[in-house]
Length: 105
Image (cartoon, rainbow, N blue to C red):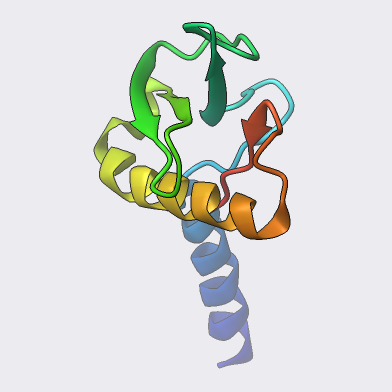
């Protein structure tokens, strides 16, 4: 029983790690999603993410570039919800002036 439980937890953790949306990881895989302020029509910070959408802050007229990798295409609607939350929360923390907002799952 103990052996089975340890194998289960090991596989469960591995599955969660592989299946959870990427969370702005560093390293060789790089960033998989980003939310960058648009200033004068261009993102304040450049990245190499191939897909993008323009999103507007729900509390002001500031626009952001929501960018993501091809691996995240099926999670875009969930990530957009996280982006809206991050923009609203940035007003509360008074860090809405930052060039990029952190997105985490």
